[in-house]
Amino acid sequence: MTGKFRSIRNKASSAAFIVLLLAVWQAVSSAGLIPKFMLPSPVDVIFAFAGDFGELMSNAGTTLSEAFIGLGIAVALAFALAFLMDRFDFLYRALYPVLIISQTVPPVAIAPLLVLWMGYGISPKITLVVIVCFFPVAVGLLDGYRAASTSSLAV
Image 1: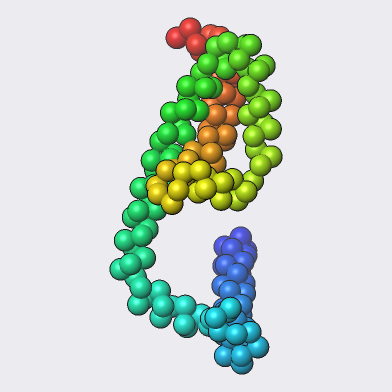
Image 2: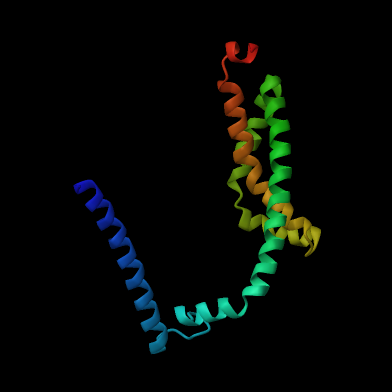
């Protein structure tokens, strides 16, 4: 019973903290300590969300389609590259350091360049999703390929 009580207490303390945070946010916003255009109150945010719900959902559909297209491309490219890097050791030695170094550039720094090079259409968004998703998928697949034993590969 103590384990269940501890779990309920942890969840209640988390909920109480969230309620306290929202109350402080509402108080700070209502008191005008921070201008409303910088920190609207939680109530204003809820009303704006409800008022713009249709438009938000329409844009969410577009965003999800762009994300899934980019993810699909990233998985396909990562699968091919990981397979080739596992199959040919010289490719692994040549490309793995480049793959690791590519993660030192934050996507926030790449995004404006993609917009400059590709315009405001769908292509820079999909390209950024591919860049973000490619590395973890490629490394995960490569680690999986390399961890497979020869006896399991013979099956």
